[in-house]
Every structure is written in structure tokens, then in C-alpha cells.
Length: 202
Image 1 (cartoon, rainbow, N blue to C red):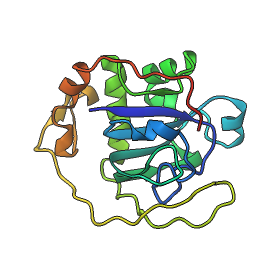
Image 2: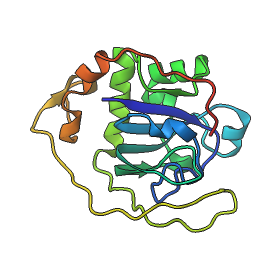
Image 3: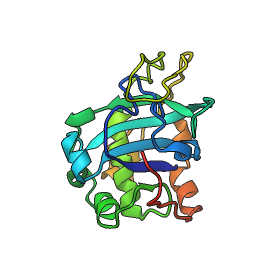
């Protein structure tokens, strides 16, 4: 399973309607091949001023992408979307190894070449959204802070449930995820290419 983890400096994208890219943040990165997204606040002055520093801000699982003319990447909605905003859990507490990598090395976004411990921490974060509802996907209202806002409505999404089982990454805690996570670890370990980046802006 590919999980995109990225640092944010501000709120508003995704909006509370669950549309990632409504303000075109992260640009072409949104078009990469991922199964879930975790947005975390950075630690700089802008993130601190916006009340998101060091927190898990939002989680999206199983993306659906819609190209939008004039934007650098597609708009993305999710089968499971949970928005924490300024009230999210502390990233360092929830995922200390992953947070150390993101913050100490000034990584803008991360999607591959994660350690086993970092992957386990990603799964722990995703568990917070396993029962979340889909992105509403409604057409967003005009917002002066955004150059373009156009989230197309989507039809009903499908949900699946794992057979009863235990996740070794979560210390044998029972889990409930979609079948598309079935070979997650094998896929990840077979693709060791790093996609760390310091260049994208959002």
C-alpha cells in the first residue's frame, strides 16, 4: 500500500468537504499513485500561526481523482475522509519515528522507501479513519483565497471489510480495512524507490 504523507503550512486544502486540491495545493504530487493520504502540520511559523503545527490534520483513504483544467494536478476525493483541522492528534506522539524523519530531515512529502516501523505508524494513523464517511464531494463555494474551486459531485462509494484478523503492525489489535489493502506490505517492500521531496509547495 502506498501512503502519501506530506507537511502543510495552512488549512483550507482539503476543505471540510473532503476535496484535496481545491486550492491546488501540492500540485502534480496529487496525481501520484497512492492509496491513502495523511496531511500533517509543519513546525514553522506559518503552521504555528494557523494552529496546525505538529498535528495530524487530515486522513483520506482510497482516492478518486478528477482532472480539472487549469490546475497542476487532479482534485481528489476519498472513500474514507477524516478532517481534524486544528484539533488533530499530536503527530510525534502518534508516530514518533515517522515524525522524526519528516521534521528532522525537512522532508516535504514522503511516499516510498519507508522503514518497517514507519509503515506501521502509517497504518496506525490510517486506522483513525477506517470508519470515516466518504468525502461529501459537493461543489465548493467561492473562496477568495483559492484561484480555483471545483469539486465535482460523486456517486455512492463502496465499502469492504477485512475478514476477522489481526494486524502485526498494531500489536495484534483487530482491524477493519478495505480489501485493496490486502497485499499492502508486499507491494510496499517491492518498491523501495524514495519519493522524498523538498521542492513542492502547498
